[in-house]
Image (tube, rainbow over all chains, first blue to last red; front, top):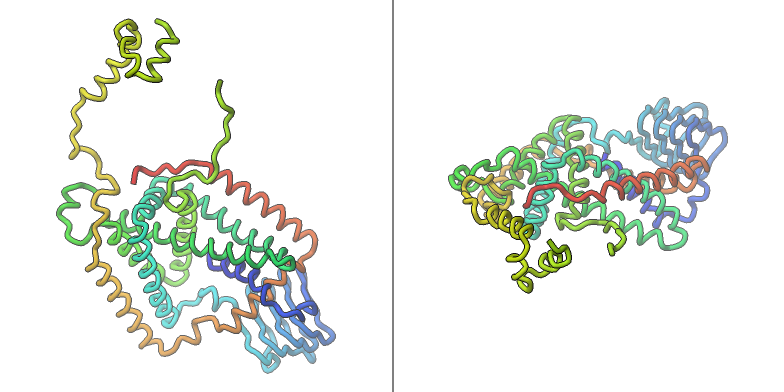
Length: 283
Length: 140
């Protein structure tokens, strides 16, 4: 879910580099598109199917519908589709046919697992650096995840939705030059929030599973104590869960939402209010 | 009891020490407070373990071991899988998707655009309302 949100945010950011020829693109929202005459530019259908009966000199993107070829229908670029199928597309697409499922990673495979584990290494490096640099803040956010889990989830869910909508609204400002920097700042903030929040969630999971409950337990431990250990244990546990087909992606997305929520709810562990409440001075 | 003098004592107890001798109400309150603070023995070992206790320890062997385990698993999976082309989204696909979806918002019908703006305002209002709550976590 978060990945989809980030893709949407980046998609809006991509307008900065969109070619000037994009004016010939064809859009269809909430209905089918029937291409009966040659089209120069891309064809995009959201919430409907595309019937390609003539030449599309560009790319085709269909979300929530099928791509159906017939007659002289063919596409010179790529066909990207999600939530549907491509029918009759054999030898009619000059580029490649990409189902969005490959991006979402719904299908589990050995290679995908390898990529996921390799990404875990990056997460491990980020987690170690962040914990060494801001251990106290991470710990405070981790405590917040455990003390107010529902609140963190609610904040995370609303915040992710807000990121996507804000990215879309900022994309309207692209022609006025302000949109590019605003989108870049939003993307940077979203990534920072996600990374910080995930490390806090690693710490929370590690503390829940392997944290010492008493002083005697703490004193008897040699390695399994401290913020760094909790973060690593949590990362390994969530990483292992991530390997489960489909459920792993759901768990990781849920952890991301918890993380974004915890990061924002605690203002990145700084324990400062985002908004000061105004009250009239008392006489 | 003189409220004004009581107030002055509360604001600056050291400057108005004599007030305690003449005001029974304040004396009673402060004796009670002192008794609660100083009279109760505190057994530190009986307190629950605080999150910050032992938090500064850096478990480098665990970090190194964890990293090695991850590297070993990744290497084994890579060796078994062969190549990654089938799983990683190709760069041209990502670029195409970004370019295509990026233009969609501005070309959406008016009703969709109004919906986006309304949702933007509503969701951000809810986010601001949620963020007004103070964190409730224990002292970390």
